[in-house]
Length: 217
Image (cartoon, rainbow, N blue to C red; front, side):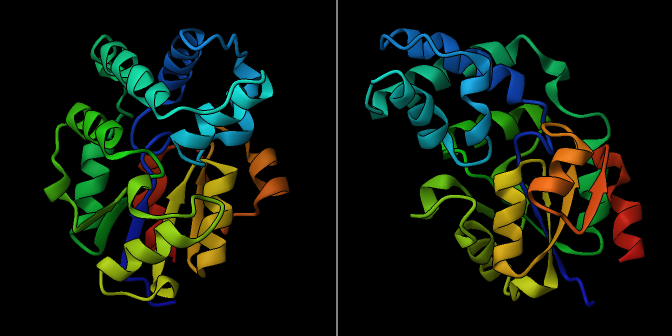
């Protein structure tokens, strides 16, 4: 297949943010009377923060409110500053290696404010990539294909000429629905979970394995 573009998810792919957004979500939702547990968030990983916060809140009988995201993002930013090691080892070199051969986009279900926090932690700006799509840019979130279709379109490519790099089951389902090839990273789910629930085309254990996988493709 003639691959011309790489669409990166952000959380769990470029930065190990999942433990920190979970911590921020649990702490932030308490301000709204929700005493959520870690497992309450698992089904909503990769589906965007509205569902990531709204799903657990609704489980405890509390309707989602946009202010929840404001509170949680503020907590998340403070936590991230305390963890400069959150960025996966070798990420910057991997991105540069990809950009030398392919068009590259970030397609994150998170809102722009969170994506900017993460990119700042990596040490790059949104302009570093050829395109950037966030959860605010599409109506339907993963597992719908919209975010990857939009990302591919911004690169001027059909999704069939793109590879999606994802850590979540929802994200891989979205990539497959878009018609793109998918690479699952075992940072949020095990290899067995990814294979059983989303069936990515390839599975890697670290983002540092990506350049070699792309060569094989």
